[in-house]
Image (cartoon, rainbow, N blue to C red; front, side, top):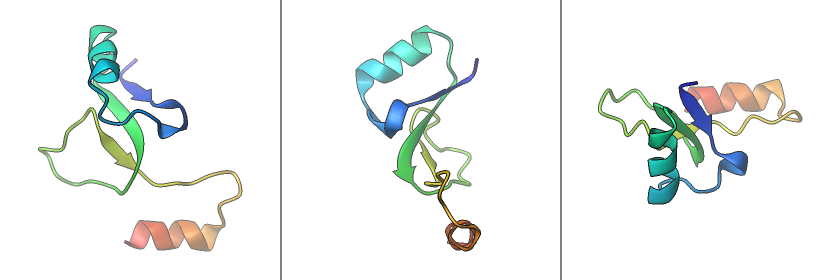
Length: 67
């Protein structure tokens, strides 16, 4: 148990959620904030993501990954 994925991505940056996640042993929080990261100093309790859902087309995924 290392990564907590926020339900529907709601609550990114919420201090109470971060504190609860840390208290329960989580090391990262995945949010619905658009983006990816390659910064080793990134805030691991506010990780960005790509919005890929069951209906997302492969060309859309390619576009998102190329940004």
